[in-house]
Length: 87
Image (cartoon, rainbow, N blue to C red; front, side, top):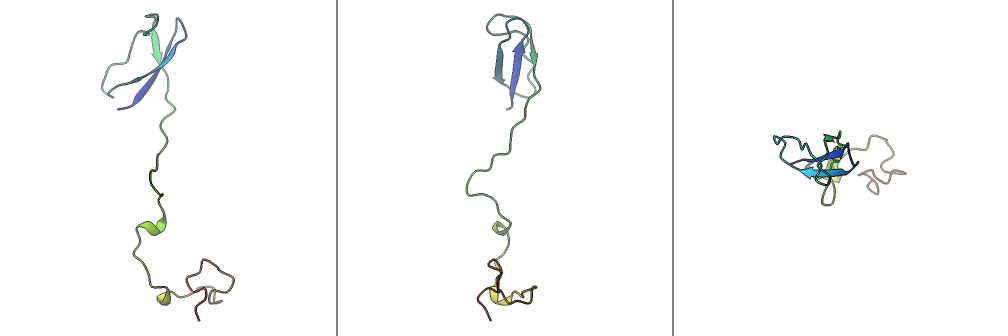
C-alpha cells in the first residue's frame, strides 16, 4: 500500500497517510479539521537488499581456459582479463 502526503490549507500541517490505493483521499486535517489537498508524491526509490545485483549473478560460469582473449596480449596489462597469468 502506498503512502500519501497531504497538506492542510488552514494550518499548513503536512502529514502522511498509509492507505490502500483504492481508498478515497482524506478531506480533513487531523489537527484542525481544515480542508487538505493531496501532494504529488516524490515516489519511492528502488531498494536493493542483500549483496547487490551483478551481471555475473545469473550467468553460468565459464571455464577461463576456454575463453579467448580479444586483445591479443594474453592477459598482459589487463587485470580483469580471464587470460591473465595464463599462457
